[in-house]
Image (cartoon, rainbow, N blue to C red; front, side, top):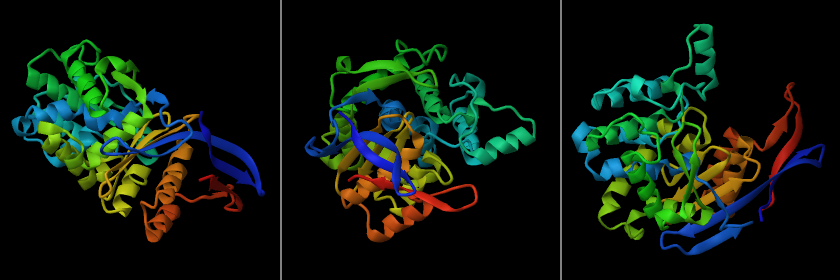
Length: 331
């Protein structure tokens, strides 16, 4: 059962709490630490993206379409809809001989509030390229083109693209495919339901592929990891926790969010994967939870911890700027 991880205080009294489950696993599958129920099953949401792109990479998609590491990073992103992200969507689709009309993720408000405001001022509609999952969908379309299968229906579970990704996700998590249930993600494609322990194990294998028993896939997994670490701004966006964390740790910690506050981290030098799920799905809890967990496990230095707190303060202020409370971890 999940346990209380964060207290939000006001006037020295607890006003709100966030419960969580945490699994910490090494690349061999050893359980390092857990909080709450480390075996809890949950939808992996967008944190599964690094493994969904694996079929395209291992089949030679980089070479066939001339994809850059930046474009690979975009395919695993949950991006903010900034100009760089929009340009990458157009660039990838151009390389696979498609246009944004092929994207079936749906138009969405950009996660970057400044971009959303600018579009409103200019009376421009939100587009599919602003959708945080347009990178993943671009990769799916690239795979469909590579396989020479119809792009129509590429979001359906029965489509060859989704079946290959389903199997890759299962392989990455060291689970039989039939043991992973599916639902529908916010962008219309299958989403995977599995224990957070296996998610953490997959991230440990991702950040240290030489210890992850990937076999022939090892170098392809390394490409995905290195692309994410080289382009943290692409993976998320300006002032986002994923991006800031990877920048502050200079690529030592890999990070990827999923909707409903499922979150995955990996320590590259240690080969440790971390998955936590905030029980109520609150996005506000993600950064303080991630920082607290990394501090607890001694995976960030004192200076890195301070730098993160400067960007994601644990002090709560009101609209006048008065300090009125704190965010406190129980670990």
